[in-house]
Length: 221
Image (cartoon, rainbow, N blue to C red):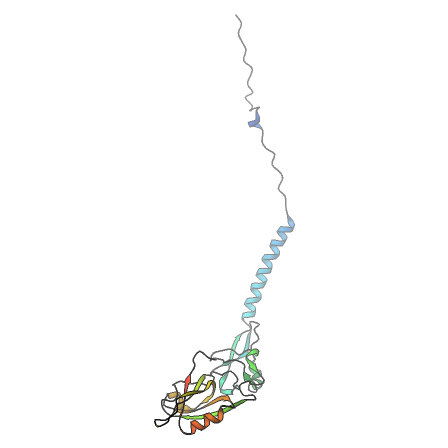
């Protein structure tokens, strides 16, 4: 009787594909990228340090305390000294205030504004050739309350009760140059406006008879 012999099994390990491990490639070291990362970290830390140190630097600047209308000359009462951080913006130094007093506002500047060099001009378009300053003594009801230098107003002819004419606009957008103390209360007062020279004689004529009123233009500057 023949007996079949089974082949011996290798118990030490499998001999098939499952026993084969894929080769692991060696890790590639990239010293250039590591160095770049270190430089970026150091650069960011340096920039942060510079910003912190820079924020501690203070400079003396000019802040506007009163509204200055476009074309108006700066006055000493409208300027005050403030200490601000040196951010690199071209703010006008307090040491330059005397030069500022010889210039005019290029645009209407509101209170609380820090003055920059581009806000002033050496010559005023509003006070140049072709313009005239006209003083108006207005009665209660002929001007709105709270007018300030730099505001824009319509100058209107308002005929008296016995007049045959209809009211009409004499100046569409006149610049308020100055306002008397009484004018701020809304009970009338004296204001000075800048108008075109060709209409100033007509305005003065009607103003002498108390037939002029002004209407504020809040959206105009």
